[in-house]
Amino acid sequence: MKFLKSLYIHKQFYVYLAVVSVCFLVSYWLPILYPIAWILIIALFVLLFTDVLLLYRFKDAISVRRILPDKLSNSDDNPIPLTLSNLYPFQVHIDVIDELPIQFQKRDFSYKTNLKPQELHNFTYVVKPVERGEYVFGNLNVYISSQLRIIKRKYQFQNEQMVPVYPSFIQMQKYDFLAIGNHLTQIGLKKIRRIGHTSEFEQIKEYVVGDDFRTINWKATGKHAQLMVNQYQDEKSQPIYSIIDTGRVMKMPFNGLKLLDYSINSALAFSNVALKKHDKVGLLTFSKNIENFLPAIHKMTYLNKILEALYSINTQFTDSDYGLLYAQLKRKVTHRSLLLLYTNFEHISALKRQLPYLQAISKKHMLVVILFENTELETLIATDAEDVQSIYHKTIAEKFAYEKRLMVKELQKHGIQSILTTPEELTINTINKYLEIKARGLL
Image (cartoon, rainbow, N blue to C red; front, side):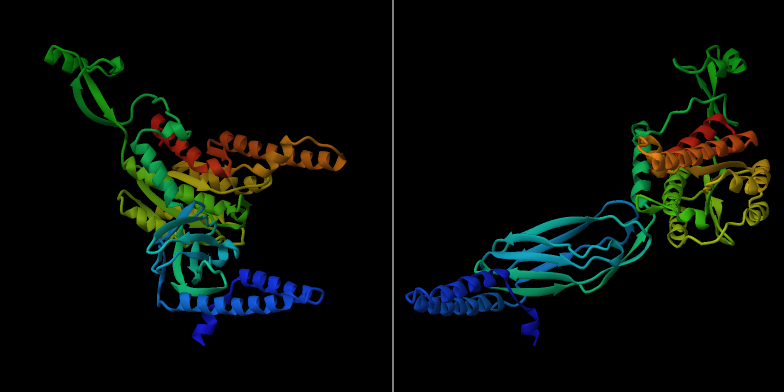
């Protein structure tokens, strides 16, 4: 029974069979072909027996291994290596069919190659998840055929392997690496000119060319009989919170990824940068209820706790309670902090309903409201209208885009910082805003 389950007829066999059938058919008019047709069919079945003997004579002659990482990174290209080895004493054709997780909705994955005797072959394919959660890879099915290509033998490896998909740690590592290498401007992060000094004095040192004349310490200069300057450092250990709205407005997808997941990826990358800047980072997620609250702490290992909290966040199909958010911040966040609020409002009226709570929060904290541009509307606005219906659609799109700009003006009017960004540029613009606030000493 196991033998029959692993035995498959190669499509080339049907080609051979078709040739024999044609010979039998034509022999009706050319009788000389009739014995030749019988010779061909006998030869075909001899080859069939020979192919079975070749492929089944050796046990476990093929080895294929899928190497899965501990976790996958959401919205990123994740490489999945495969290692293939041929222990047959002859060349074989191999067809690998991997049963990918149902989230990818891909049922036609196949990789074909030829392996020489004793050859080891490595192959890597790429998967790009757009949802967090558990992804189950099924069987690794391998079909082997010899040069005769009469039958195929099926091997099966690595039954069901589960790997979790976490927020984009690849994106986080990219910004971390670029920050260390001082190449942030290559990806759009701006250098912000510092205004004045931060409040933390570090030391008095000798003047060197390039130091700011305004930092000269005249008293120390007179004492040492040479120019001395005050050296300042960035104010450290400032509490910074990423606040993520998990209500229904964050369910909207762009390029296959929900606004919530864009926010989660950004919050993770930003928290890593803030920790490297020696600030404290915390996390709060809310909708109808407060779902997660992590107090601001400066500890690099704390990033793992933030990652685990972000992994379990799901979008709620309810309107978010900003009154509850205000009450939670008033009770739990007692020191002035930088609050980055990831949310979205599609209408100016929706913003005005929540504006009193945002104003109350901004009186005690530095609040930055992050809003999303609807990139699909921008594409519609950029296209030329060709008929009345297109004109109508374009007018409505321009109205929604204009309302987004009105929201930014409304927030600025009440002294609330804001970011209006496309989902793809969310992380860059968020880090830019953070660097600007740090440079200007606004916190």
